[in-house]
Length: 325
Image 1 (cartoon, rainbow, N blue to C red):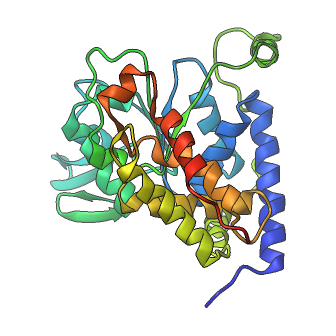
Image 2 (cartoon, rainbow, N blue to C red):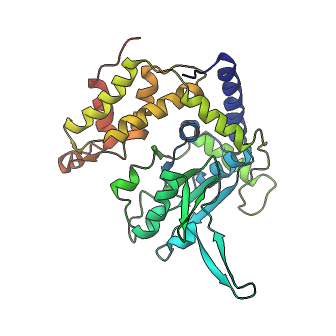
Image 3 (tube, helix red, strand yellow):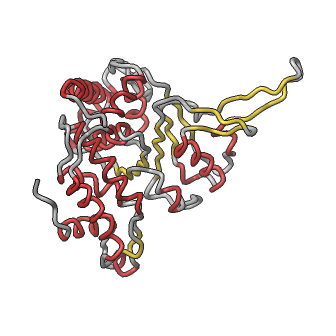
């Protein structure tokens, strides 16, 4: 059985730290958000990002793509968006008398699905096969997507008029639900200076971000993350957390088995990001909120009391004993 070598660990640590530093040139603050995005990338997974407009979501994705010379695609989801606008379509060319396949914007490395909850369910579902299988089927022909492939979908937590909430089956496809909050006053000052200093217009600048590696190197990092060692007691701890959500006061519907799997995958990636070749219980704790907040449903009584998913998960973590390694 393959294991993570010391050389692989050292190389991965250096590279991930370099990527972090490059992202910091374009994105001011948001360190926790950046780490969660990198964890999802290492875990070969997808992320749902929730935050009000103007907090740098597009800038972060563009900067990340630039660090590994990856292709970047963006889809603005609207009520009239069709599935073929996402996946592509086949058209008949009269000049050559042949059918030609036109690939949609999903054929990219990093796909920003902006305001995904504004499109109807049929269009949202067009992403399901791509997210789960890494391929798209057009006219009965399966076409593989570039590797690595990652969907970063956004939604506005405030405006709900005219939206189509994502069903639980689709929410479950996202490893993390990441919440982006407002920057601190110092961070906003630095951000405003960076964007407006000797510049006109509102173009997102990622020129300062250097390309460090190729997409193949990212695939190697993903392989390294999968080889991070895990003690059976840590595995049992992750399963216990997910299982506890099914019988916890205030939670109407708990996380399914994919919740346990997500905790382990994310904890492995977090350990590698921290420069370790093994998972610690704190890795599982640290990823519990983003990995499970979209996989549980709170009771009406909890909502009336002002206890949201994060509040309930924090209380649950206090009651589930962590192993001592």
